[in-house]
Amino acid sequence: MPSGQEARGELEQELASEHGFPPLLARVFASRWQGQPAISAPYLSPRIEEMKGLGTARDLPAILEQLQRARAENRPVLFYGDYDVDGILAVCTLYLVSHWLGMKSGYFLPSRFNEGYGLNRRVIERAPEKGYEVLFALDCGTSNLEEVNLASELGLTVVCLDHHAPMGEVPSMPLINPHLEKSLDPMCTAGLAYCFAREWLSTEGEDAAPVEDNFLDFAALGTVGDVVPLVGDNFILAHNGMRQMPKTKHSGLRAMLLALQLGAMEFLTWRDIAFKLVPTLNAAGRMAHPRLAAELFLAADEKTAADLTAQLISLNWERRDMQGKIYEEAARQALAQENAAVLVLHKPEWNQGITGIVAAKIAEAFGRPAIVLSDLETEEGVSVGSGRAPSGVDLLATLEPARGVATKLGGHAAAAGMTVSSSAVPELRELLRDAEVVPLAGAEPDEPFECEVEPDELGDELVPAMMRLYPFGEGHPPPRIRLRDARVTNARLVGQDKTHLMLTVERSGARPPLRVIGFRKSHLAERLGERTACQLDVELDLDNYQNRTVLQLGLLGIEGEARASEKHRYNS
Image 1 (cartoon, rainbow, N blue to C red):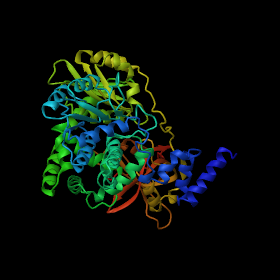
Image 2: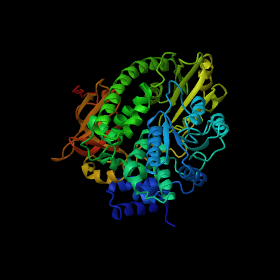
Image 3: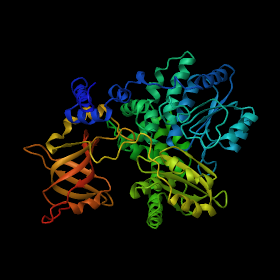
Image 4: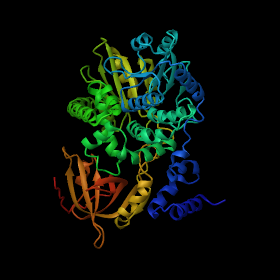
């Protein structure tokens, strides 16, 4: 049996010779995938037909049986979703499939300000009055024991697709949830809905191919937007769906791409989705009502799509203004919690639609999990909030000590929601101050770099291979490289608030210099001198620059100090 080093060398050679990996990428991914063929398979052959899908899901036959019966007996189905892009896309996918099948159906998306997250009693009570006989919960339901029991008492048949971790006893209903079945990949609900739609149409004797043509981009948008691990089926969905997105068949998504100046792109990056598309779509649920986003995805004509897109873009500008103000106030509170393992930030007036984004930015800026809470307008003395954590942290497991104080606590490893009595916020803060920060199972080790190279070894010749391995994200991070003897010829602060650092690194001969971008790394400028030879830790990614896809180097850190005798040069 070959030694570990020999096995890694053999895999490196295989990746280079059989899969066409450039030597640098072959070295990095041979080290990651050594002895793990099941992990590497989706990246080497990301074909839809290779997906595991829901074939092993215990309750798949039961859910399909209920929908077959609903179609045969003309029983109306209500698709009940969530107010974020994942839940909205799941609803739109299955609602459209039901219409393809000629079924009676409708959908409901809760307002975070009125009904809140999860199944709502008032909506359930009204559903039979409106003629619905089947309730299909999407992106919620796993932790709604009382509401599911109520629905059953009222004669509704309840089925569910969800990816949130259970909070308490799981309701008795046909349910598919990766948290409850380890044979399933950790898909978001839009991904589950995509896979379910294929099974549904096949069971009805219909061609499942239109699902790929029409909803693969929805599944990719939900997968990237909900930050689920890019492993197994998730990577296959994201990889193929992102390639399909520029050619989308949906008027609404096409209108949004055009409005965000992404319509001419043949290749979208994960940043295009995570920082442009998703925030604009989520602005509906954060600032108004999620049905605006659903109406966009369901729009049948270009004028309706363009009008809804304009509304969402306007709402997103409002959201950004409000977010900036809330972040400043939350950051001041965070600075006062210097030794807290988990930051608990609270102000009654903060907009509930913004707290999740602010929590994410606080977690990133302070390197600690953060809970951001505000008070309900509809219920006195009750605070609700959202939690986020830095990459590699299992947030829900970290918040386990809060269960004794929180009246509601749910979510998954990347995000959590919480309800607590306003008077109990100080107790919550004290409970979480010394909490154990639980690492995410299988998280990548926080190594500074995976291999060392000279600047001349990097260039756009890596782009085709990087595109095959795209997108990168949680569970599939971009390659981390140390640049030896990097000569920085220019350093400038960029961005609206000058918090990003742009470096120019020279290469030998006539080769164009490398551009290195350090997002929120302006503080590192002081360590660089003009033409300073240093070691830069960077991650390799892709970007669209001047209408072509190029290699992007993201600055992670600087090894060694800049020479003190040399002055800095900023072009800010």
